[in-house]
Structures are given as C-alpha cells and as structure tokens.
Figure 1 (cartoon, rainbow, N blue to C red):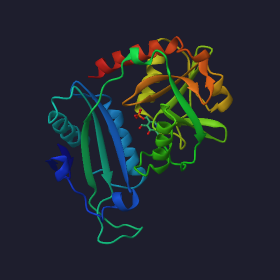
Figure 2 (figure 1 turned 120 degrees about the vertical axis):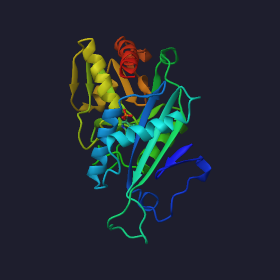
Figure 3 (figure 1 turned 45 degrees about the vertical axis):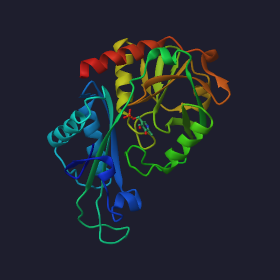
Length: 280
Ligand code: PLP
C-alpha cells in the first residue's frame, strides 16, 4: 500500500498527473525515514528537516506534525510483515493547468511509500567497503532535500558500475559528502566531518553519529576536510538513514588504515544500535 493525497492505495493504482510540477520540474522535496520494529527513528529531526526543505523552496507544509505522524503510522501499520521499513515521503508543489516555470497557489501533492529494509549487521562490514572520488558538480543548496537528484543518480550509477559502496564528492579539493550519505574521517582519535551548510545535506544520521562519538568522549570537529586528509585518515565512515554508519577502507586505489577497519567505528556502530533502541 502507498499513500497518495489522503488515500491508501495499491502501488499500481496510484497515479500522479503529468501536470504535476514534481514530474515536470522536479519541483519537490522528500524525506527517507527508517522504521525499526514499527517505530520511526528520529521522527522529529526528519519532520524538522522536511519543514525546512519545504520552507526553502516555498511550498506550504500541507500537514501538522501530528497529522504527519498519524499518516506515517497508518502506512507503517499496513506492512506488519516488515520488521524494518524505509519510508519514502515526497511533497511536490502540486499540479498546474499548463507547464510554466512560474507558479501560483497550488495544492501540494503528498506521496508516501514503505519498503522493507534489512538493518545493517556489523559482521557484514568488518572488512570495510570501497568508494571512489569524483568532483562535486551539484548546486549550492545541497542542504535542501530536493528530488532533483540527477547528479546523485549519475554518481550512484557510477558507484554501481565500479562495484563500490558510494562516490565521495570533492569540491575544490574539499571533500563534502557522498552521493547519498555523509562522510566522516578519524585522525589521531578525533572524528571530523564537513560543517553544515550549503554543500552538504544535514544528515539525521550524521547527528546521531556525532552523539555516539560524544558518548565515548571522543572529540568531534565539524571542519572542512581536504582530499589529502581523507586519503591519510585512520578511519573513514559514511552515514545515512538506511546504511547507518559504515566503514570505508579503500578509496580509489588507496587503502585506508592499510585496508583495515579502525577501532572507533565498532564503538560508534554499537552505540548507534543503543540509540535506535532508546528512540523507539
Ligand atoms: N547526504 C546525501 C546527499 C543524502 O542523499 C543522504 C541521504 O539520503 C545523506 C547525506 C544522509 O542523510 P540521512 O542521514 O538523513 O539519511
């Protein structure tokens, strides 16, 4: 079952007009919320980011947080067979009578779907993952979670073709984030990640990962990271709602920490599991 504009429908019965600006212009924003055992993890931060994305592109928020929570819970309840779900939520500016760049007052289109997902298992990542680096060609409003994701789509496809987990993006020799994840490095016991701002998505998982490091009194710094710092790091991690926090041990042809997962990632990973259970 999916949710579309007030109705729960079978996926193959849900249709959006060709006049929808989400279709014509990618004029829409989205969220992805992880659900563990029926409970949305970090509901409030996700809803806060959604309202900020909507505000950034001047789409009125069609629901109160209470209404969002209720509708999301209904959607989750339609899939009791899936212990963990990944909810995709999209709000477009709505349908117009003709295709034109400018817009008037429109009724936003709201779409939500649930997909099953397997929570990551630590034992699957003890050897670490690989990534490649590419120039970050995206626009300068990456902090807004818009559905115009062509650059990200192309990076993801390149990652797939190169058989690596993700693409690490570099803007003027500064590593920003990945095509669909935030990035961390560890050097001499300190965790570094790019500061919030126009060049990265303010990941919800990123915040939880920083809190996990804080829990162990590990220093964290939100500063820019050069490509040289990245390749010389003791540990590299990526984070996202569905991948949680994963270690990268090979970037392009360079081994990180001689290709071995470092000592801090397992601690942060374990604490993340606790945070999940506390939040539920
Ligand atoms: N950065 C980008 C470009 C993303 O697309 C995502 C998630 O899809 C993230 C970071 C991680 O965000 P979150 O932790 O909120 O899932």
